[in-house]
Amino acid sequence: MGIYGMVTGKAGKSGFGSASTAEDVTHGIDANHLTAIITGGTSGIGLEAARVLAMRGAHVIIAARNTKAANESKEMIVQMNPNARVDFLQLDLSSTKSVRSFVHQFLALNLPLNILINNAGVMFCPFQLTEDGIESQFATNHIGHFLLTNLLLDKMKSTSKESRIEGRIVNLSSVAHTYTYSQGIKFDSINDPDGYSEKKAYGQSKLSNLLHSNALSRKLKEEGVNITVNSVHPGLVTTNLFRHSGLGMKVFKAMSFFLWKDITQGAATTCYVALNPNMKGVTGKYFADCNVTAPSKFGRRVLSPLDAELHSFLWAMSSLRLHGRYCSVFHTDSQELVNMVADPDSWPRFQSELAEFQELRTSFPDFTLTYCSRGKNEKADLLAKNARLHNSAFDYVSTSIPL
Image: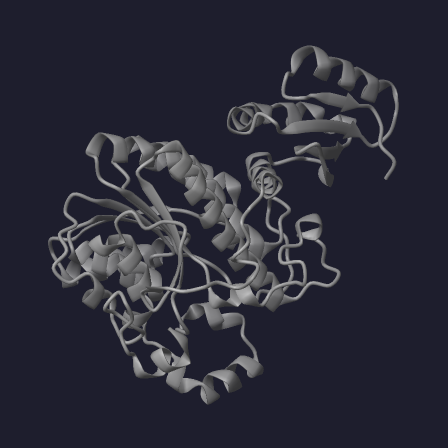
């Protein structure tokens, strides 16, 4: 759409533009037959999207950390629309344990799932690691949503097949995906505090959202699954995402006030992609101001098989809560090899979580795992022997590795 369209609000090919609101782009749509999950639906864009989808009749599940805020949001939506169907399930995207608990609770409700809006996020945070040992912006913005999407995918597939209604996954990326590290995503040093930039780390996580959308879109098309996956830039919107921003951002906002949207406009692109009938069959695209737009050179990359395997690595990271640490990732003949380094004493705890890795092997049969102890000793030798005999998750076990 460009700066002119942002400033003037002029409509693009879709008939909508930067001045359009979430109510505008969903006007006249009956969503009574749809169930949607919205992460971060307690404030800002997420809350407005939840309100508007509920207004159109959808059964909305708000997924959020703060129980009090979620209940207040639900009450507000119902007060405005007594017929609204809104429920809340707790979800902390920075915790893979919480993501799994959320999915377990949702599946227990035996509801269909037509729409998944991955909206929640954090921005410009100081460096810190989550309980899973992953840099917080990458963990919350990408890993959490990546895991959530994969765990809900079977439910979305069965819903679309049984209902014959197209499923839609909407990932909130950002124009910030253009401002990232020189290599795009620092796969080999995600958790390294050296060289950490709070703004580039945010851009990296938003680029990951976009690439995830593109890769999953192609995968589902190849499988013939009736689910679309798109990413959106909501625009410049003042929300609580800016709570970590400094003086520089305040100056920027003051100088660019004419580019900023209110909340009703900020949620428009999300609601357009999630609900508008003109979006039927459209997948693997990046949207801004309710129109398809070109992402950055990093976002335009066509993922090679090697790139796709990097996503399987991220999936492994989010599936296994290791009591050791990742050493490195290698690629040989298009196969991924992950070295996991742990103390032999951690084996009982580590072994208890390997069932999840067996699940992973079903989706990524070329994925190989090497377990390495910190030192060669009698306990490590026994560990290796037991692993070879009793755990088919390991393709190869080494009893020592230089650190």
